[in-house]
Length: 619
Image (cartoon, rainbow, N blue to C red; front, side):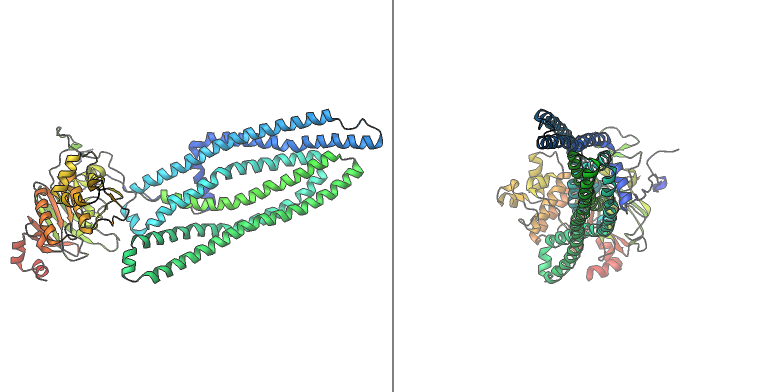
């Protein structure tokens, strides 16, 4: 099999397979099993927690029985004193029994502390891993995912949902183990004291179970709805805050508040119902347990009078009855917590299971930047670009590029011209492989771009877009983003070439000035100059300029144009412009309309043809 990375006649070889979408959890059971698999790396720690929780609970369960023995010693001593048939209270036996009981409780507390410490570590590590996996997943998702998902929705999954998991995970697992152990252990101890009273106490179980099932069934969908609308509300707030200037400019406050009120009302409704259903669980369980408690007291009195049941056993049994209802109540409460946890976990796993970008080619090409001899998969790039019958559409049913072909020589200055929506920016996105072509191929120096590692492919490009992107940090760091290991001298030289050095030095703190989160403490034109400086510092093989001078005044535009001319020397450059005056000196102008190249040539040649470009220019 021929593994050479070049395509036959420039055609793609189709060496990369399409990744199938991952399965998504849609129910409690499926989400629970997926969560258990996710916890696989911590199974030994969880096993230790389970063992320690069981041991701690067992020691706690034996306590009332031992305390009952002390009560029996005291009662027998008192009765003996009254009847004159005994020596009185045996304080030595009582003291030994209480010391023995104290030892049991100390051991129980020790094991409880250890299992709590381990479980806290597991829950924190697990949520840390989830945040890390989501952070890494964000970088592996295709841009098409972000086209249909709001930033607030993603933020809600990495903050609200994982916080919910973190808060409930630590307590829920240990409480489940403790509650089950308590139920089994207490049941054994109750049968050892009196099977009659035990059967009466158990009569409350079916009623309690039925109440739990009814409430949980109703609360599950409300907790799910609560988490969903929490994400919608967060997304709306983030969107409105991020574009509050535009909202105010177009008097959109009323519509924004109305939308928020609608989302907030639905969140309020689902949250109120879920919290109400969770809140009534405890009163219902207490009412049922109190009925059983009264019945046990009556029967215990009868057994003590007629069958010689000791006072200590009755006291111990009553304590067991109260403790027996406690784990049932805990299970009821945990069931609500688990529903909320499952709703949050489901949303997290839905995100982690989203289809990712097509994986890298197994024999991916790397770019030779160290001046070493080229090899089959380590090549030097000159900068020629070929579009070979490219077809693409964001929606497969609505193609944007129908059959786009073009051949660009290394070092050429190519202008992409056409009406809005004709596909100019789409071509750039395909070139940098933000999206993959539906059909055809894009080649650089004869190599299919799908055969490059994405990191290496994108390192060939420098971009200056109409929508400037800067982040919260110093001006120096924002320029250095184009080359992270750049020296101070390189940063200043890049700023000078972009005509940005002068205005930077006039700002407070100069290159050390902090840009705020909205980068609103510098003008739009100044932001554009900083992005140009960043591109100059990156020193790429291929330049992409998408309306790079649209936000600056005419004088600054001339200065930038001069810097750009120097920057574009010996580099392949793609220039997208609506103002045709900015692309007069292009080596070749590709006139694009409805996804096809309808004309190509120099500015003078296209004007002479008096075709589509001529009409566009005169308009």
